[in-house]
Length: 112
Image 1 (cartoon, rainbow, N blue to C red):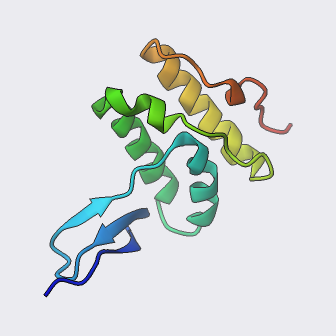
Image 2 (cartoon, rainbow, N blue to C red; image 1 turned 90 degrees about the vertical axis):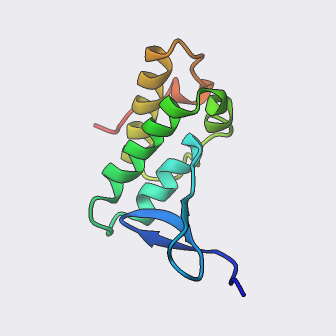
């Protein structure tokens, strides 16, 4: 009998692990979720690198999901540095692959 998959952290990313730990599936994030995820996993070693790298890989691997990946807007009350980081990454990906840039990134700047 199989136990339902439960979310957990493995290597700095949220994954769902089945009861036998042999079949795990990584959770894919929308850009709007990234600042919150980065803040939540700040104490996990290499979490930022893994999360951002995986977002970029997902962007490249599933072009048909790019609209889904850009849905919503991040919480403006979150860490302004994380928000600026994500906005810069999203802008770069959109420009690189000639994809329309979401409106929310236009006014995002890191505090000085």
